[in-house]
Length: 456
Image (cartoon, rainbow, N blue to C red; front, side):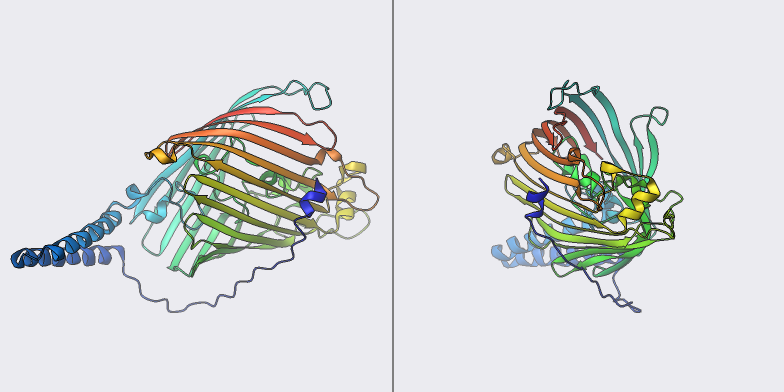
């Protein structure tokens, strides 16, 4: 598997953003001023229609009526604020519900989403041994977005999440993000707080109505550890046909890394160790309707002062790179992602964590997935969507290990997912899929998943 993953090539890339401080941003009309201007324009157009009627100029009347309709629609959008947000609209890389505060004229915005997931596991592994897994029905996530827009320049956006139905039974309550934006102009804005790391296709866009499948992909769990958030500050905006986000954040805590990936190294804004910091940047092409294509890069150290038994501390330099594309064209939905991670000083990290043999943290991790779906109801129109889909995923969290250590073939994983999902309206989705899970140790366990999801 790792050979086919690396057949995509080793990508060496840097995304650099050179942005100077803009001391005097161009003056922008406030929402109230824009409303007044549009109301005046509607009045002028209505007067022109009356004059055209007097001249019996029917072509002029038709054109003026069309212009009135367009202006009135924009005026209604401004006045309604968050109530006018369409279910499939998101801004600055966020999901539709998470974007509500940006469409609010002023004051409080409320949104959210939820996921109820049933997992039915095969009774045996691929090698015939009992799987030892118990079927599970889980109120996986319940999320509330709370935002507040003080004015056209300053806003607060937060996501509060409850996992697994109850904090009393392995569940937890978390702040998924909480940041303040200073909106300056479309090209450059400032963000500070607990932010979502802008990597991959799921970490920022993880509402259940915007991705196919009852479960998130393995790659975007082990290598791009969704949901991944850290505290930091940075810039975001749109320039020409491109959008970007770039932050400086606290680094991982490598003490949580394992042979299965770097997920345990997330600090999540909770008393985060800040001996080491990291930079992350993302650049996307968004000008083509239906197409999102780009990449991101994460660079920093993760040692956080961890002592090496051989002396000194371990730095654990961490570089993660990914490329992604998502294309929606008519009834067709195509998606693909490639991710690659490289860690330094892993031998020292293994010593510090007392890992031996095949327990080694991977020096290199890589993987990719490709996915295709088709809305079979698209030709009929209406709100309902029915999408059969297929996804092939392959990844290895020990693509390379330090000298003297061994790779565990169980971490060399292939997953084929075949499924279907139905959206009776944009805000509600029902999902069903089957996953054929294989690995190099022949211990994979297949499963069937059912899910109910919603956003508001």
